[in-house]
Length: 218
Ligand SMILES: N[C@@H](CCC(=O)N[C@@H](CS)C(=O)NCC(=O)O)C(=O)O
Image (cartoon, rainbow, N blue to C red):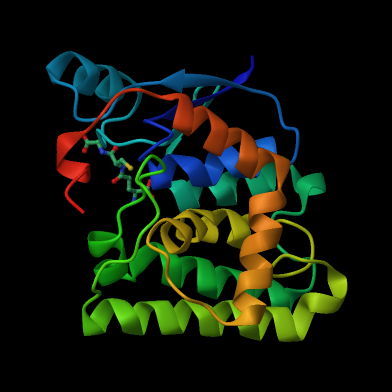
């Protein structure tokens, strides 16, 4: 039975983007189930019919359901070891997991102030001190990885992997909100924006016409 990935609007759903990219960038076949977010009770019930968390993304693999973007990436790493979503080397794998968990559980100010919204015209806004700190820390993470592992390829640990999937929506946030970054961070963003799977998600998101008003505030 084919894998099923339940996702929200590609324009807005940064959490959905992560496992979708992990699958698509590795040519792992899956069926996509799109459920519009914040569109009313019927759609919420559809999400709940897949996962009692009531949130997307969720991955359905036969009788196994995995919810939460990072848990899905972990599952995919076990299920498809040939995709090498985590580095083979234990120390690098621990590094990749550390920055992925840091992304997953942090950077609230940036996430709140610069929501992913692919439609939004590019333009800067005034960021809080906390959000500016988040931007600085994310760049530090990227540049540290590029310095250590840049010899292996253009992504954080060489080839595109689970940590890149976790940071991919930030690339859109930095681009959309015209956040100035250091050259090494820009190189990483350029590598991400050149990835066919990233482009495919972006093109599909831009083709969506659904507007979620509460995400159009800035
Ligand atoms: N920690 C979760 C967060 C999931 C999440 O917040 N999903 C949002 C959309 S991006 C959602 O499903 N919202 C719909 C709702 O709350 O009704 C993950 O990483 O998957």
